[in-house]
Image 1 (cartoon, helix red, strand yellow):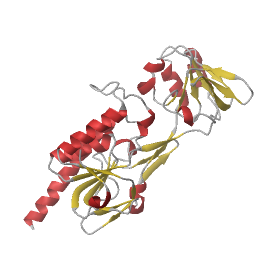
Image 2 (cartoon, rainbow, N blue to C red):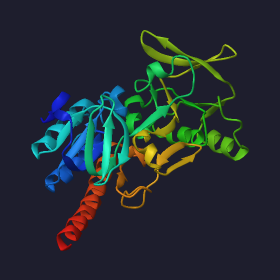
Image 3 (spheres, rainbow, N blue to C red):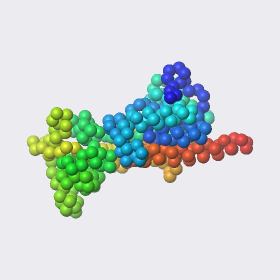
Image 4 (tube, helix red, strand yellow):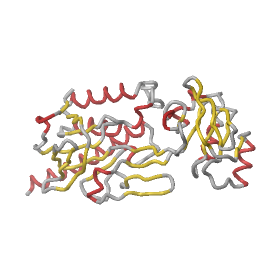
Amino acid sequence: MTERHGDDADGRDLADVAIVGGGAAGLSAALVLARARRRVLVVDSGAPRNAVATHVHGFLSREGTPPTELLATGRAEVAGYGGEIVAASVRDAVRTGEGFAVRLLDDRTLLARRILLASGLTDELPEVPGLAQRWGRDVLSCPYCHGWEVRDQPLAVLGTGPLSVHHALMLRQWSEDVTLIRHGLTEIGSDDRRRLAARDIRVVDGVVDHVVVDHDRLTGMGLLDGAVVPCAAVFVSARLLANHGVVASLGVEVERDELGERVATDHIGQTSIHGVWAAGNVTDPFAQVIVAAAAGAKVAMALNAELVEDDVSVAVA
């Protein structure tokens, strides 16, 4: 695999595309662009969102693959077509005469005609003692990613926002023993309570104080009043925050709502800043790995088409 470190990665040569983020979306885009004979640099900090997960699920032909293995395979495939992996973190990016300068935390600078932002997102968890330490193990977010692994066990949903009732109703598909702990929900409407009751989902009007763990296994959620809600796993709708700092100085538009924030793009992946594109979880917080990978490929084709038009214009001129 081609990796760039130290002085030899000064990056003064102009690349076609600098991809910020070496996850499923970034590597998928890099593969398409490298096969299109573009010079591609993938800047990878080595801290993927799913690092705590043990396996990837719902990815046809890759079911059960460890995330680290999936990414290692992707990096090797990109390198096989001449794409370059830059092991570094990005400080910021600024526009230049020919495109953009991507400045790294180690003071290197990479130059590229276009930027593709595939930097993912961060899950902002509720401040409950012990919750973050169990994240990705038995504190979970996505039923489609982890529901099968905890099927037929007592499950809890930590009420945090507008998706919590939906979360509980969905989890009933995997277990007959589901409890919704109201926690941060100001109220649950009478209609929602009827729907939950119809599916035999209990509602506990309490606030979680801590996570109960026995022999490194979650066994319940401890409430402020001293009660414990037994469960083998708890599902949390974390607030989803896009890792968009690399282009913040360029004024890229970010959409925000009660669920979190995401980089705004049009239907082909262009952001509000010409020359800056985005794909994957940074634009779609709920995209699973297979969806993020598909988005990276789709955006890469549109981006390459734009570069082709630029090349034609230069040739005509």
